[in-house]
Picture 1 (cartoon, one colour):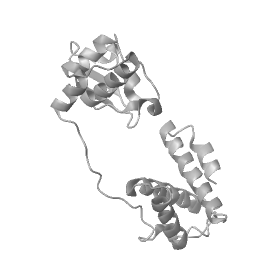
Picture 2 (cartoon, rainbow, N blue to C red; picture 1 turned 90 degrees about the vertical axis):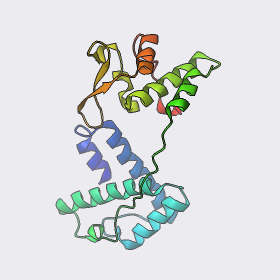
Picture 3 (cartoon, rainbow, N blue to C red; picture 1 turned 60 degrees about the vertical axis):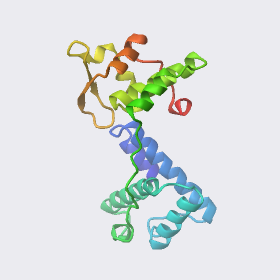
Picture 4 (cartoon, rainbow, N blue to C red; picture 1 turned 180 degrees about the horizontal axis):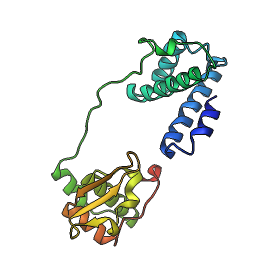
Length: 201
């Protein structure tokens, strides 16, 4: 069912959402193998919920909010399948089958720390490029999937602001351009060289 759901929503969902669906699907398949069971609509019950959440915490070492995203998608699929008349199991709607969540700790860098990162001499151009991408993100608040939109074509108001349509919300935002961010755009005559998140990290 998940495979069919992904196939029919792929054209209307963002790539990141489809990736998230695949991630949940993979974790459910691994859970099936580990527990030597076959998941069906009928056995998505409290026993499944408790044992899957425990597996995610103890075996996968996932945070509460990461587990919450997995449960959210399982509830979504159970809901759409129920609407399509594929099952009558309503346990997923119960309060006890909730999406676990906790307040995330917001971590940030001070202006002084950002300046120290900017002034650090790095041994090669590759690390210099990564540092500039990081600083650009810090000074603009733009997510990694929107880095490619940070270029001279996005500059407005005499080069003092950026106009960007974000991938996640599909909304146009106007961002005041910090002098350090402007300096980075000038240095590369646009955006620093883009790399994958894995290489960036």
